Length: 76
Image (cartoon, rainbow, N blue to C red; front, side, top):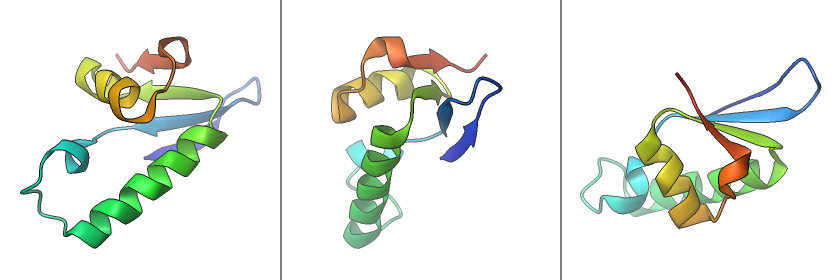
């Protein structure tokens, strides 16, 4: 997760991985997963645009965080 401003001044959030959400056997414990989920939720609310690492990450953003598809672009 990386936040920056683009040349037009919009706040952009770059998301690389959301595997901690769906995988119960993830290397992070339950507390770390909840903290990451809370931080991701806050950053997504603040962001004007979201850049996803892949199509799967974009799908998970829509599925878990209800981010509109028009706010997401795929890095490529």
